[in-house]
Length: 309
Ligand code: CP
Image 1: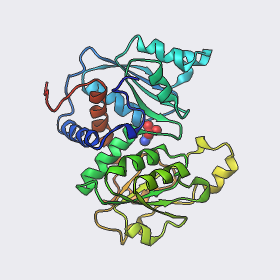
Image 2 (image 1 turned 90 degrees about the vertical axis):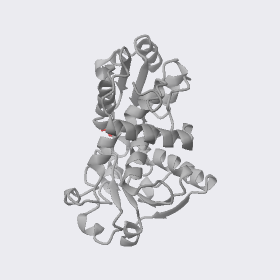
Image 3 (image 1 turned 30 degrees about the vertical axis):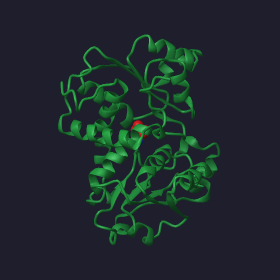
């Protein structure tokens, strides 16, 4: 595995996370830097995406590199039966970095085992989404002025939600208190609760999205119930609309509270929240550009803060 690959957020130390946030801050002030001249980056998306793919591709373009790849695997030779291993080995002949989203948990790890080219995991099934976590951390830091000692409420699909799994792991350095709000079918998996226990992370579980929980939170992290992860469509229908945030529910929230959502949303945040200054999900998505510019620099071993080209 190339040491600059990023499969799981757990691979990053606290210092590395803080450095990446500094680099993201630098790119927010200076988004256009032609430091990838001559570099080619592949974006291989075996699962649909709007934000992750387009923000990674924008990041490469703003850094002066070139992008190849596909947004629909049915247009690649995967549809003829080519294996993931062969696809990765072929693409490795052409590029300096692979950014890959796949529907199978572990696919990104597997990709790192069959190539020496760095791989960034852009989401593997219900497992991990580390670049989302870097933009989430950047968004939390920007809105709260700190990462330490925050109360973060995760709502919705905590079972299949790779963004909440990655965020939970990254926050181990920052003494958070988590509220997990979900129905039994979508509860936070035992392995992540064990992770909390091992790392001294405080958490509470609730079926109710209560005023007490909302009003004691610094961050409300809403998630979509992901239809594509269910094998039983009737179960999806039963749970899909259990938790919806409405504007009136924020009336007594802490002034510093911000509503995050990795997006896309369906019904879990009512449109009447969008004009509330606490709604931060569209800015959060914009932060993805800067966080991903920072991750691309890490993957290609470019230290932009000490080498301002
Ligand atoms: N947040 C996120 O991963 O969005 P996309 O699926 O649109 O990339």
